[in-house]
Image 1 (cartoon, rainbow, N blue to C red):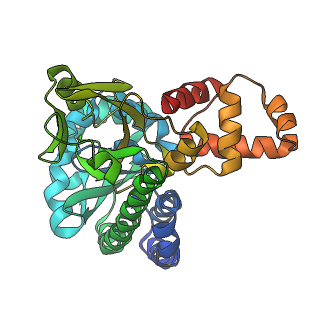
Image 2: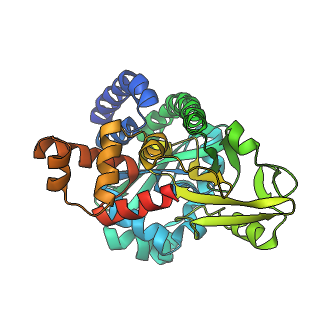
Length: 367
């Protein structure tokens, strides 16, 4: 029999469900724990890896186990997500909580479709089990993947995996609520430093904004249908381009002309890591200002945007000026080990991977 032996799978599944319930509170408070839950599901189900994605194929980069990193990158980079054969399983995921290849694919299709013979075969993958769960009306899928040798997911495995659907839904809903509260806190943090802030999702819709940004809205810059738009045609075109389900925004700033006053300058800051959230859908932070407004200190903005500690923000700003980590450690009278630890935290929170990334990031926020 392919897959995992029924008695072994039952024992593994019981361990999975017990562990999932134990980790639920931690996953809600710390979305990074969703990676652990995905890894646990992979081990318990005898799978090769897992990918967490929305069925409408936005925010797909949110979570992927290390074993599927290469396959996931190819899936998005080469556009396979736009014509995913397995989207045929969405109705079943909605009704019974799970779908597998055998539900909607014949052996002949597996033998000839490029999805199986090109994309999956290049990484030794073949079989799929998608556990579906809804969050705020959107269907998500924990996509478990097996190799040819591991075999398809058998009926007894499907039944047990389907029982995870309500657990995933509950955890995701609670996580989403916590993340949205954090987004509200993020915009309010900018309010405290007199900076107008608005957060967009991947489709360009406004999720949260503070009073300072609300004060900029009017005839020339407004929210229409939940989207930010401008009377200035060029600014309207650039704002519309911020609706990008995949990749970073194509521009770093938008200048919206006004009829009765100076223009509004809107700086575009991609959100990464904890600032983004897994289920809340935040992708882009917009910081608005009017020429002549005193700039906020870069360290204060770094703290608000990326939840850096004061020491981390100070180090990030110093490194962005071009000095070395050793010079920064000497300037702030900290050990080299402490400086390295702070830099590691800065990279994790901001998504930067090298000092040149910090230069661009801080320069953009300080404008």
